[in-house]
Length: 144
Image (cartoon, rainbow, N blue to C red; front, side, top):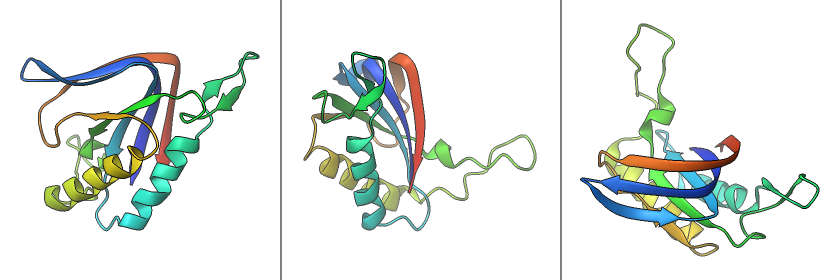
């Protein structure tokens, strides 16, 4: 399971011209589910996300977590995080989990994360426009 985590001042998702999720200060999380991922991996990734210290203190040091700053999270499904580009010019997505199972684990991730912080989402499987006002920029790839 992979999460591309971006510290944001604001982020929102639009589907078919309608805004479906928006946060202010917090994390934009692009979530990829790999074939064979489990609930245990969801738990580990949620723990990493909420405790990841990527918010700055008064000295500019990464000292605070999403919990510390009382931030929010916007979670967007992103199977393309498992693109394999080793051969040819067209990415292969063989490592990505099948949509039914991926949706189940994505929804579980959202549910568990929302026990810690306010969470907004995109729409699983939809064509989305994701708007990100990155803060820093700070972008970190987490994998469990």
